[in-house]
Length: 264
Image (cartoon, rainbow, N blue to C red; front, side, top):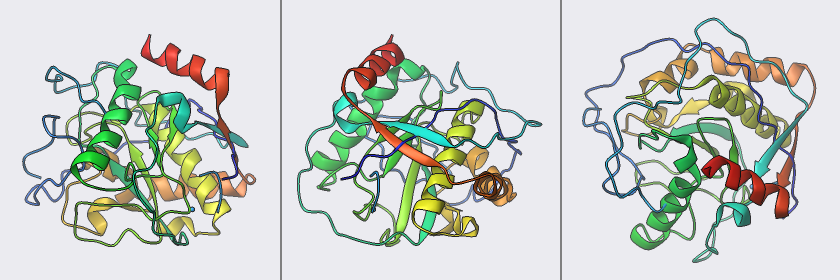
């Protein structure tokens, strides 16, 4: 698979508070024992914590007045760097036609736990769900680090009632019914979606949340508010207007050192 580039930038997007669909059941692909709400590819392609996480993330901050700065280059940490297991089965091929945002529905209290969380999600998806790999194409942590997951040429998987074929699946690590969306995560989400929109010739107007296509509270009220308000689509369109975003999948020692730094 061709390796492309991701940049973890830092300016933020507005997050508008919204309470919506609280009568829908929470549906999550996170590993059992993690925190969830109770009401509720042609390109660069979790061991859960043993203690219960607090209900808020100490590293998360949400902006209500900043804007997203367009970038030309972004980076993603390769699978090998975060300790991914090999695929456990055959993938179903697809062509990306739309952009869909998820959250893990697991409160991430400390960003240093993010690589461990990603490994745990993969283990749960392979061993408990019986899927060939982690369900998503990319995961973003609270500090805007981007993790390469399953190949973008492979359709995702889901425990909910929709067909993920044709969906580009980007997942934000956290439970955004319970915690705010950090500015760095918002910036990285825009970057990833702008890259995907350009790479697969997909209109940013196709950006949706998981709850728009299935009976779930995903990606959480605080993250979904950026989608429902149209801000996320606008920021992605502005990024595309500034020029095509390229992606590099970072591997080897540079990626391993970044994982060490995150976990430290």
